[in-house]
Amino acid sequence: MAFRPLTAKVPAVLLREAKPLKAIFGHARRLGHLQRLLDSQLQPAAREHCHVASWREGCLLLIVTDGHWATRLRYQQNRLVRQLQVFEEFAGLTRILFKVQPPTVHVGARGHTLDLSTDAAATIQATADGISDPNLRAALERLAAHGKPKG
Image (cartoon, rainbow, N blue to C red):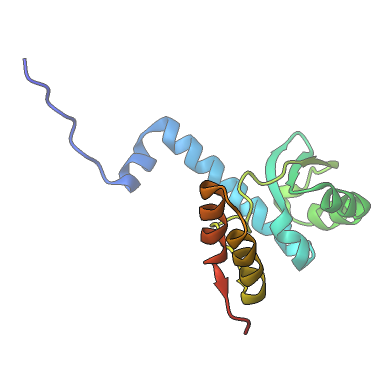
């Protein structure tokens, strides 16, 4: 008996026909819409730090990147509730909860970069010249090789 793979379907067809995927996709679209409404009422600086997690039974749960932004948004909570209640989607909004959840990937940690001035490289090389341990000397020389001219 030979294995016969299922015929491939276009992703758009899967999203329309497969019930679990359809439900997940619908939920994601709904959260995206709620996020856009929330963003319209947030200060521009706060938008990247605040994301809609859920909206149920009059309670909006927002994920905030750090405690600083959570505190700032808590001070604005009453104003934000009033502004969001204007939208039909948030008509039953009674409270907003904030949960602090730092991002899992740091934006600044994209790659390993080393900026070393020529003066620092020369100092490291001079130190390496006075080291008798060959492994340590080689490591310092590799580090000194990263020196770049200022400018």
